[in-house]
Image (cartoon, rainbow, N blue to C red; front, side):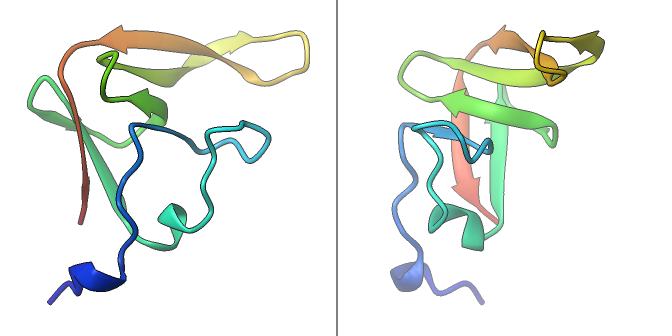
Length: 82
């Protein structure tokens, strides 16, 4: 069983990149799931529920720092604990 009292509330915007100001280490201690348009995605780098988008890494393209470029996918976003 999941004990929801020990889990922090999921933020409106969250990023897995530790350099981002939207990164929250306390949330990542728990398993998080993201659904966009009713389908669960496992490759989400960043999401924003209120603006309705997620960002996923490009399979080949890199930015000038050597990090994968992030592509924006728009739709209805739902974040939840597994």
